[in-house]
Length: 82
Image (cartoon, rainbow, N blue to C red; front, side, top):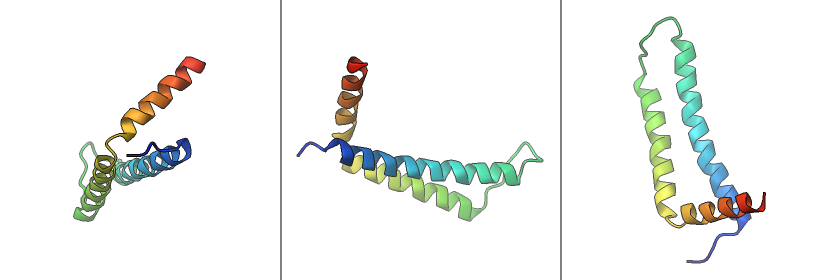
């Protein structure tokens, strides 16, 4: 498998983060919409949206098993320069 360029790794990271931001926004919306009580009631649609985003994130992450190692080595290289 070929090594990913830093630009491609950055783009993949941005897509992954976008998925997590979507989950965060869905949960935040529910928290604000139901701010008067201590318990939350999620609609089936909200749960389905959250589950779909998480499943897509898992699929994307599992298709790229070497990305983590490459990202770790990039982080280590960056830390040693600073």
